[in-house]
Structures are given as C-alpha cells and as structure tokens.
Image 1 (cartoon, rainbow, N blue to C red):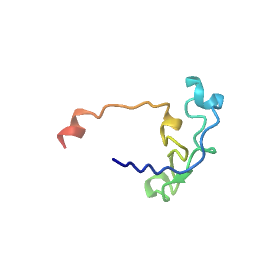
Image 2: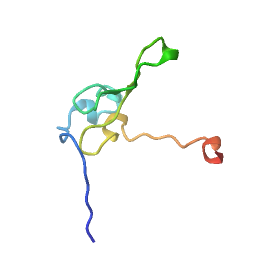
Image 3: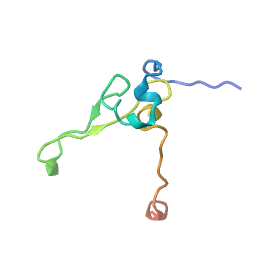
Image 4: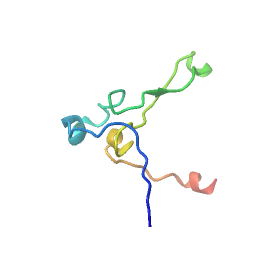
Length: 78
C-alpha cells in the first residue's frame, strides 16, 4: 500500500503561540496562514473577510488548536 501526502508550507518551530492554548488565534494572518480573503462583499459595505487556512505541515489545526464543532441537526437534515 502506498500513501501520498501533499502539504504546503513550512514545519512549525514549536513556538509558544502554537503550543500554548491561551494563544489560539494569534497565528492567524501570520507565517502559517495562507492569508486568503473573500472578494469585496456588497452587504458588508464593500469590505472583505479573512479566511484563515493553515499553510504549514499539519494544515489548519495549527490555527484552530484542533478544535471542532459538531454540525447542528439542520446541517444533517439538509
């Protein structure tokens, strides 16, 4: 069996902002984020919104401290 794993970005260096749960979110917009944004949104007065996505070995878990939420009942019903 062969497995191909493709990831982009550097390996983290074990920074405190990654290791300590208190700092969750501090790496958004930094070295380990793709720094993506939406297009200008009409209903937000032409503003854009950030889309945090991990650009590092391991992906987005470096930005969100491996937190997740279960979808609501309506998500599954749809």
